[in-house]
Length: 339
Image (tube, rainbow, N blue to C red; front, side, top):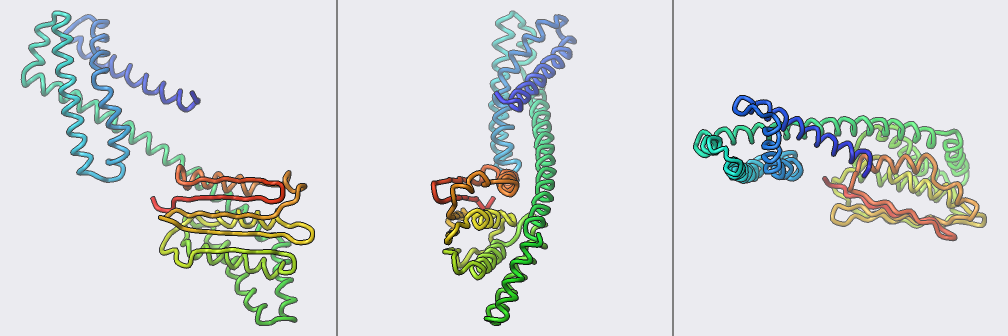
């Protein structure tokens, strides 16, 4: 069992021990034997615990947290009635078994139902409150981690994209094109401007339009194609219509940049990029050539960073498979875009 798993078990044990001891202390008013009270309340806790966990592990996450109020109230009502019935018959059975007929009679009438219903409702409300408090702190921690990771991502992007050689190489390409092909030079300048603008301003956002992200990514690819057209085999395909989907910025770009960074080989290299969207699931496949000596240089801060961002932004909603073959390197990424 992991450390976090053992901590959760410990917290649950502490809660139930506290619950049993508190109710046993209250029962001293009716029965002065504390040990006996603890055993009785332990049995009663066993009878209601399954309904408590049914509520906080299934009903609350699936209905209450998703604001399906009517469905939650309906299901909670059924669970509460079942919980009350089990608790009632457990009380009758236990009290009669130990010969506490006065207690059995006290809990058999309308007053007994009210007492048991109030106790069960208090237990349910306390456990719901504790669960919601736990969820609040988990989300706060998640938001803090995500904010830190976004800051790191922004800094890493600025370092990698705005390094002098990045600017110089592209400006140098535009400069020579102005002499040989002014029309293409203007086009590349616009593409270069779009890439820089997108990285400077949209990198700070939590989500951006997938359409804008793909337009910027395509401009980046076109610039690379112009710069390395003599020895680059570049193929890419994007969907024509992506609707109003949103995506975390710069995630796709990281894998494409990595392909150009590690894909270059003497005598030419290739980069193939294919992106599809099926049923709101984004599929990205990037394959590039690779020399044997480059295998040790793969990964690094950029890839580690994007892995962490994916884990924070798309938990349980993405898959990432990276494969290194003899002569090429491939990335397969899927992201569930809708919530």
